[in-house]
Amino acid sequence: MATKAIPTIVQLTGAGVSGAPVCRPCAPSGPRSVKDCLACEVRHLALCAALKPDELLSLERIVVGVALPAGKTLFSEGDKADALYHLTDGTMRLVKLLGDGRRQIMGFAFAGDLIGLGVRDGFSSSAEAVDDARLCRFPLKDLGRLFRSFPEMERRLLDTAQRRLASAQDQMLLLGRKSPMEKLASFLLDASARARTAGRPDNPVVLAMSRGDIADFLGLTVETVSRSFSRLKADKVITLPEPTLVRLVDLDRLEELAAGDNDND
Amino acid sequence: MATKAIPTIVQLTGAGVSGAPVCRPCAPSGPRSVKDCLACEVRHLALCAALKPDELLSLERIVVGVALPAGKTLFSEGDKADALYHLTDGTMRLVKLLGDGRRQIMGFAFAGDLIGLGVRDGFSSSAEAVDDARLCRFPLKDLGRLFRSFPEMERRLLDTAQRRLASAQDQMLLLGRKSPMEKLASFLLDASARARTAGRPDNPVVLAMSRGDIADFLGLTVETVSRSFSRLKADKVITLPEPTLVRLVDLDRLEELAAGDNDND
DNA sequence: CGACAGTTTGATGTGTTTCAATGGCCGTGG
DNA sequence: CCACGGCCATTGAAACACATCAAACTGTCG
Image (cartoon, rainbow over all chains, first blue to last red; front, side, top):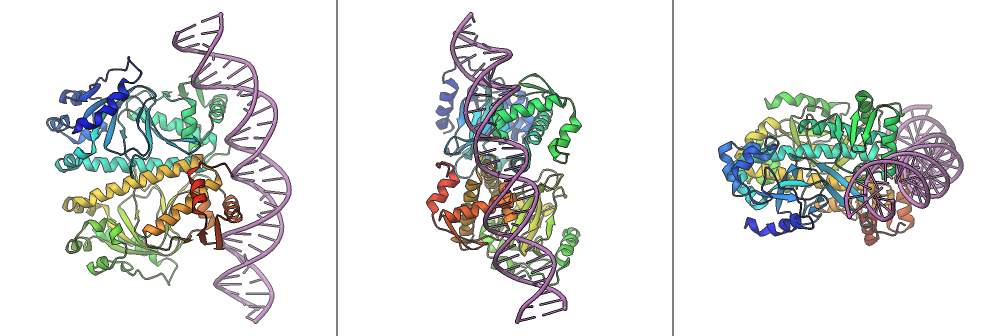
């Protein structure tokens, strides 16, 4: 039943990486225990927050832990959507491709985020691990029953979908109308804000993804992203101790840029 | 209670236009009657489809009809979101603005579409009538109660939100990575497909919106949109009897363009 | 130490924007 | 009835921002 779809996952976890990280709150694969849920660091962010501790038992029979090494694909665009995932640790990217290989990243997911929303027929995008990731898997066929028992869960899911839709619209504005500098400023502020709400350090922001990923998220080329970073650095808006570490120095200027009501340089 | 929020609407409908169109399925303003719902041409597309005819009585006490003349604003980005709307007739656009006036259209809504999804704090975008529009208004505060009585409605809403998220992702791919020709091809195919599912003529497609609206939807300028139309016409992919009327001639080529796996011209 | 992948920087090209002008349509008013 | 003005769409010419092509630099891992 629930085990039927697991082989794919198991195959992924095991593929090519012997040192795959062991999932702390979740078992690397196989059923979870309630103890895991109680210890889960991001439980307050998730669907599970709709449940009281004693109700978590209902999850035990349904949820399966998944470990996904960096670079691996959880599911691909168009795959039959048979589960919803909750990212408990790591970073993932949601990717769409054009026929000739052009790539657009729909968004990044961090610990506490749901993955697998936005389904039309199959999954609307592929999900790939940026760094080593751990997830909890909720089979869709069990979800309906769960929602009937705990309507609060369904309400939270709807809320989440709404917030995701709002973010998607912000991104549409960014992609359609913002300049490279404005795009990067928006991206950095967003990354910082999300790190903050997730309880990770938000001022020197750690960027788990490569320049290429950022470019494909912002609708730019690697070179333009890199040049924009350099420009922000030259303008003393940020410092860049390492390529993956960004200190936001002039927040006002950054927000001015992101909002697009600036004197264009 | 429900009447508290109506004045805004009444003001809108009445503002500056004496010849505001009378809402056929919905009364121009004020409460609806069940008879209206039964006669509603787009009921099968809406939340209301979750209800059996005899259950529609529950709606009567909640839903209010709204008539909105072309060009008028239903709500603005950031407004407190106190209602969900169902467009029964006409066309609307969802708009976001940048500080300096740059505009991005998040999408167009046609008869049968829900408006007011994607709420974060307030509405995430403004909603404006492209042509004369009529809507049904569902106050949010009554919606919770309605969902408890008819869980099927909430499920439909979640489904709708998911499909909207998937469309938003398609649009992100378009905005970030497609060329003007590819953007326009995608737009025309989508317009045709949506007209078809709504039961409107889908091959000579009628475009209710201006070139400017299309430009702001596709992240282009009016001039580039116009040039792309001309190019498609010259390539015998479409004909353009009138600026608002597009006949799709070479569907294969159009789909090739939209998918982005083409030999770039 | 050398190979490699990722990042940055430089030089060049080009597709889209910007600026400008023309033509068509429609409603208004002479 | 036609003249006029406004709005929208189209087309042309020019400028420029970002992409492309190319090379140097950095850090990492064998």
